Structure formats: structure tokens, C-alpha cells
Length: 368
View 1 (cartoon, rainbow, N blue to C red):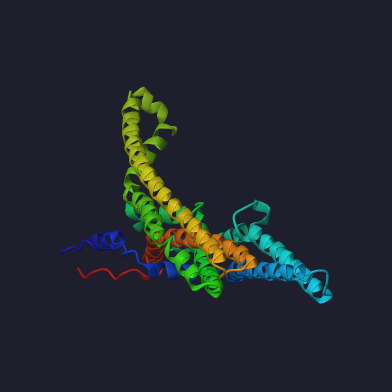
View 2: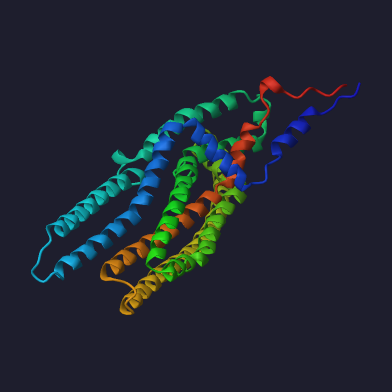
């Protein structure tokens, strides 16, 4: 009788990993959105509304300054209609500012009591973690003996509950990308109305910063993925030294041996992490330099246009506000996109875990 080793095929299937792709992120975003439709729709709707309110505020300020200039040039003759229209524009301007500030406090990560982020995170925990626990409970017990599968489960749960994991790294950054794209396009269109070159100067200047920001995010993601075994080794020795077995280790004079093993692994991990952090800091320094250079370039160009008579005083105020907002939104768009893209490894691991075989659909054993 010939026996076939079926466990080798099982372990080979578990060891196999999906190649991380951008499509995994889109699938994950849509999967989480479908599980938490209500809060996700409210969240992304608030982001989009905030993106559209910013150019509206700048255009209202331009209209108010033009009305105020018209009233001041009347030389003693006052038009009540002009005064009321200017006052109405000013009132609408402050109301929109108030609404934008209120939405900003709820959608961005500020005080905990006002964060929609926490409501969304709790809803995700309720829906997604329960689905993952059901999936893990359905995995055959012999598969859980494979270290690779346990590493994958640990990484997925760390990704789900970490500060920059599923909620912040995928969903919020996905909202950022969608909302900031709408904001950049709307502000660029508003600048184009004042002068076409303003739109081109401010949009093209930050493009080199995309590479700097994306490269820094990829370095950190590659470091986490390539050093998971080293981290597990250090964690194993650390847990062993602080476990109830520490007394036996000291009795047999083995404590120093395991301490040396832990220190060697921890020092190696820390040294690699420090190199990545320094490299990422240099990339962020270059990124911030390019962004602030773009703001200065756009502002100087707007002042030159006003000196040439192609911009009014109200137009200058609106352009300066739009330029600053546009460059900041381009910066947030690039940061959000870079953070979003670097989560594709975690997204692939998430679907790798979901595709693991279950007890209800085991492979048929080979014939003997």
C-alpha cells in the first residue's frame, strides 16, 4: 500500500501568496463599504461637501471685495441695493465658513468626541471582525499548525485594529483620495477662470513630490513585510523570558542564553528600523520643500498678474486663498494616495486569509 502525503499540498497552498495589486485595494475598499454602507456614505458625503465648499468660499470673498470696491467708489452716493448685496455675500461667506469648520471637525482626526472615524471604526469592528472570526473558526485545526498561516492571521488582525490599519489606512485614505481629487479639480477650474497659467503652475509644481512621498511609504511597507520573521523571533524570546517558565530558565542557567538571543534579534530589528525611518524622513523633507516652493511660486505669480492689471484686488485675495488650499489639497491627495497604495500587501493578505480552505469544502484525499 502506497500512502500519499496530503499535508504537503495543504502547506504548499498556505505558503502561496497573492501578488499584491492595486485591484486588491479596490476590492477591499468596496468590500468594507458594502459592510458599512450607512456610515461610509455619510463619511464620504461629508468629505465631498467640504471639498466643494472651499472654492465657493474663495469666490464669495472675491464677489464681496468687488462689491465693497464698488461702494467705496460711489463718492457720496450710496446704493442700498449694493450695500445689502455686499452684506448678504458677507453673511453667506461666514455661514459657509462655519459649516466647513463644523464638517472639518467631524471628518478629520481631532477631538475623540466629534470623530465620525470612531463611529465608523466601531461599525467595522462589529461587521468585519465577526466575519474574520467565523472564517478562522471554519479553518481545519491541522492547518492552524502551519506557522505561515498563524503569521497571516496575526498580520490581518493587526491590520484590522491598528492605528494606521484598515479604517485609517484604507477607508479614510480612500475617502481622502476621492474627496481631494474632486477638490483639486474644482479649485483648478476656479483658478482657470482667473488666469489659465495659475492652474498650470500650481498643478505641475508639486508633481515631483509624488515620487518622494510614495517612496517613503513603500520603504516602511517593505520593511514590515520583510522583517516579520525577525520580529516573531524577538517576540518569542521576550515572551519566554517573562513567562512562568522564567524560573526554570534561571534554575538551569539558561536565562542569559535566551536573553542574548532576544537582544541580538531586537538589536538587528531596531537597526534596520532606524535606517528606514531616517530614509523616510529625508523623503518627507524633500516633499515638504517642493510643496512650500509651489505655494510661493503661485502666490508670486498672482501678485505679478495683479501688477500687470490682469487681476483685481478681490481676485488676488481669492487666488491667494485658492493657491494655498490647492497646494495643501494636492499634498493631502498625494499623501493619501501613497498611504492607500502601500496597503496593497495587507489587502492581498486579507484575501489570502479569506480564501483559505474551510472544513466544509476540504480537498478530496488522493487515492491510495
